[in-house]
Amino acid sequence: MRRLVTSLAVALSTGVASAAPMGFKGSAMGMADASPNWREAWVNYALTPRDAIGAGGLYMRSDDETRTRTLVEVNYTRLLKRWNLADAQANVWFFAGAGAIRGNDFQGSKLALAPGVQVDYETTRVYLAATARLYRAKNLNHDFASVRAAFSFYEVDYDEIQPWLVLEARRMRGLSDKTEITPMLRLIHNRYFVELGVNNARQARANLMYIF
Image 1 (cartoon, one colour):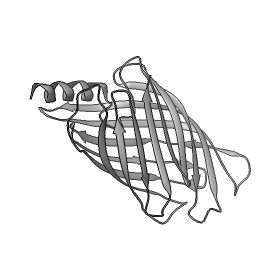
Image 2 (tube, rainbow, N blue to C red):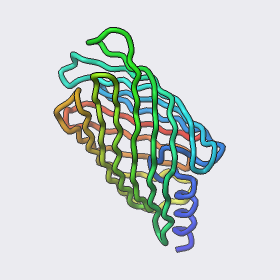
Image 3 (cartoon, helix red, strand yellow):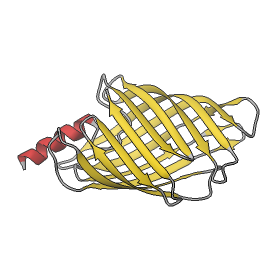
């Protein structure tokens, strides 16, 4: 029991028991998500335990592979609310992004705004999250939503690698009329995680996160 309580406290306080969008104060976090229709990479720096600033890039492709979008943005992340429960933690996050978006079906670039929210709940064995983000520019609407559920196979010490099974469903307006469902195996350590899976369109997907 003491090992469990210690592991939970450390993992939850550093925010690496899950896919938290920022690390602890003074840390830099890098993250990448790669699949044929969606490629994203960004890095941010935690100014405080609740605030981070960063920059990133996003590539999106339609299901029929005819339209593409690329977005380069600066972003801000804010932990709006945290509930520290006896054996768990719950969070509400806010995102604000702005940048230039380009597409292969229009000329030049457009100013894009990308606000969003994430709500999550986690223990050392269970993780649930829902994320919504608006990707808006003139005559463009690529709003994004996802839900995630995950569980770990067994408890580990803080410095050991822990395997998780993750199931995610996500959807983006304007480029796809399908819901992408991806089961993934996650291997998580105290400063990084790796996720590998294949979605319901038989496309490979890989996610990486590292806290410096």
